[in-house]
Image (cartoon, rainbow, N blue to C red; front, side, top):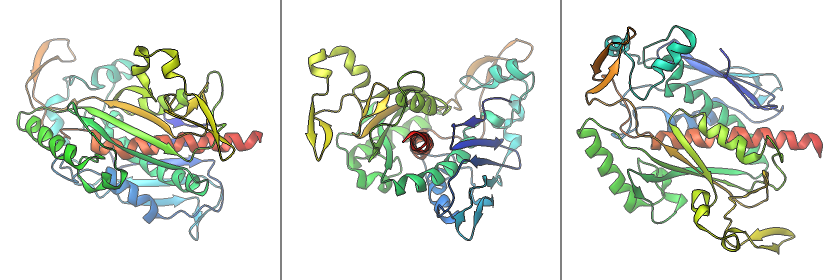
Length: 354
């Protein structure tokens, strides 16, 4: 099956299904002598794993990572790094009622049309559980980026139409929705709880900041840095839109307002507003890269919905199982991981030409 590999130099292939024996990844192109341990990777996996709070699925997975290759005495060797996360809390019987029925909002029908077969247990390869492998790979990429002084932080900017009014990065991990505003977080939690009680779900916006990124990453035509980052974010199943800097708000601005007028500071450029979001002409300009991902409401809801079966007969469906009433809190570490994979890859590519 194509589409399982991401990156050019720092290259990641993920494998596994939601209800299979496990999931994992193989990372090729990892530079030697990076300090990598299961403990470092586990910290990011623990932020994504299910069962964290009342606003996440209650599936209980420890998401314990095993390093199978590429690391010796705590350092990468330059060989491919293979990581495995075993599944332990599958309840495949929860999905027996949808064996021949397509869930609205999911990849059930399209996957079946493409391959003529599908793993209906939790969506199989199309499940959000696959993103744990991305987070594991992203944790390795973060180690490389930290050595270059690059930091990536994401948070729930909005959930169910409730926006963070302040951005305080120090409180993101102090609330269960990972919002940068504790007051807004309380409102978000209440809104998610209300939707859950109704058998429904909420969507939101995850904002990602890439700080310390040097100028010069990315290419000017097809592989623009914002294009590759957009590809990375849109590869996350729940993401339906991406914008950078001022984003769609730029359509209501004049050029004199939107252009980032440039000044010099410490022999590098700086701008007043960073409406470009840290990327100019597809290449990083040294400013903080700012992008946002639109996260759809969780497709798996317990409300009765109309659908069809394999015979194309109309029917109704009530989805059982354990599902997130809002995906934003767990998309946060996934978005960080995908951004880390892109920047690590582009950093290594840039080192090839300079």
